[in-house]
Each structure stands twice: as structure tokens, then as C-alpha cells.
Amino acid sequence: MDAKSVTVGIIANPISARDIRRVIARGANLQLTDRANMVLRILSGLAQGGVNHVLMMPERAGLQIHIQRGLHQIALEGMKMPTVEWINMPVASNAQDTVTAARKMRAEDVSAIVVLGGDGTHRLVVKECGNIPISGVSSGTNNAFPPLTEPTITGLATGLAVSGRIPPLHAFQANKLLEVTVNEKRDIALVDVAIVTERYIGARAVWRPQSLKELFVTFGDPSLIGLSSIAGLIQPLPRHTPYGLHIRFGDTDNAVFAVNAPLAPGLMTPVNIRDFEYIEPDRMLTPTTQQGSFALDGERELPFGEKDTVSITLKHDAFNTVDVPRSMTYAAEHGLLRQATAAQ
Image (cartoon, rainbow, N blue to C red):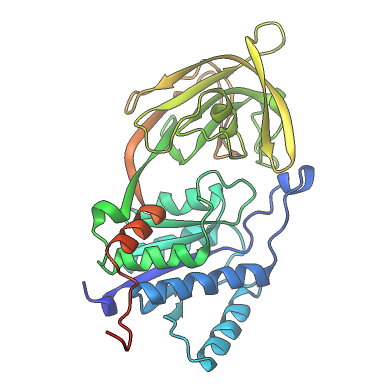
């Protein structure tokens, strides 16, 4: 593949990571300058990986100004960076900007999309990106889905992958998701689907354990935070196993045990567990709870009642991500970053 033909998209929505969990817990707000520096590190990695052109989502918070200043300074220092083009699109300064940008990037047939955000931002991109692989950089409140990798290395691995220097078998990883339907409406979650008692959307974010009725997860890592940490502390479930986990919550009368889980940054909360079971892929499940709301990756989205037809299905190999650790291992083993010296 000719590196000059490779375009990568970057979505960095400055309104992400501003939900109520940042108030009730102890999550820190990422400043614009910090976000801009993360983007600049991604761009540096992409350049070293062979990417010459980048499409970026526009915004009105000032992130673009910081990035342009950084690019100007880097150019004065003589460092190589991709050409950055800002997408021509309306800016609403909300989550819709992420959706619109992902659609535009898909229409432009970018080779990959690097996403700066948490679980919710990544979920919105996956809904719109089709077969385009994504790379995740953690900057949200709950970051269960995007792995904690340095932005420079994420950009480098993505560049090496999409420029064809790493074979797809080593560069990309298939991922699971949960498909949720309420009557004719369909939505997805990348990490977890919780059923809560409230039938209103409100502040969206879920953090009160007493409202939890059921939880479905694609993976559970005991070292992470958020609702999926409950699954990780009960039965650790790797990201790339073909099955998921279904948990039913109880009260003091019917719970078998309780687990003390980090539902948000700095917020450890005991949660009563009634029972749990594995979820097989492509098996349509009907929750036992008859009314409430579905919370997708930690945010209430879909209310439902007794007369609604609802289902949850685990989809395997649903979308692709750049496997940064495996890509970098391949690059090291095959000397992709070695350079000849005067002695050679």
C-alpha cells in the first residue's frame, strides 16, 4: 500500500468525560491543553508509522487552536508531521459531533479512526464506522474499552498497521459487542449493558448500586473501573474470549454474596449478587426485568416497559481495533523501526 494514499481520522470531542460521575466521584477533568498534547503525540506516531494525511473533527472549545499552534512549533523544529485537514461539518458542541464526524470519515473511506475519549465516545464511533478499524486512547470518565496505551505508541502502531507494514493478522483484533433491541429500535454497547429500575434518562450516568437489576458484559477486567468491574471481580473475562457474562443483582434477602466494586473513579461500592452465568454468542436473551431502562456502557439510553419487546444479543467479531501491543511486538521482531547507521 502506498503511504501517500493512507488517510487516518482522529476524533477528539472536548465535551466527552463531563458526566455526573466526575462530580460524585473523583475523576479529573482533562484540560484542553492536555487533550491537544495527546493529539499531537498521536500525530507524531502516525507520521513515524507512514501516515501523511489526517482528517480531524472540528470543535468550538479551542482544541483546534492549541493543535495548530503545536503543529506550527513542531514544523519550526523540523519534525515530520502529517497534513491535518479539519472536516467541513456543523458543530453542535455535543455528542452528535462525534457521530457526524464518524459518518464523514466513513464516507471518506479513511483507513482507521483514532478515538480520544472513554467508553461512550468509542461506542458512538463504532456505531457509525462500519468496517473501518479504530484505535482507542483513554481520556473519558470510565475507560474500560480503550486500553491504557501512550498516544504516541497508539499513533505509531496505527500508522504501521494501515500503511501495510504489519500484516492484518498481526495488526487488527476482532471485538465483541452487545446488541440491544426495544421493539424496532436497535442500539449497541461495547462493554456492558445494565438494566436499572429508573425509566427516565435524567443524568444518564449509572453509579447507584441500588438501581441495578441485571448486567450483561462483553468482558470483565478486575483492574478496571465501571460496571464491568463487577463482572471482573466475580469472574474475570478476557476481551477476546467468544462469550460474555450475565449477572443478576439482589437485595439482602436473596443475594448470595456482595462484591465491593469501583463503579466510578474513587467510588468503591458494595453490590449484592444474586447469580451469574455465561452468555453464548448470537443467542438472543430476554431479560427477567420487565420494566426499567437499558444503560449502554454506563449511560441510560433506552427505557422499556412490560408491553415492549426487548432482547440482548452478544455479537462476536463485530468490529475491528488496532492491536497496539501485538503490532509493536511485530514491529520490533521484524526490525520495522531500525535505521541504517554510518557504520553499515
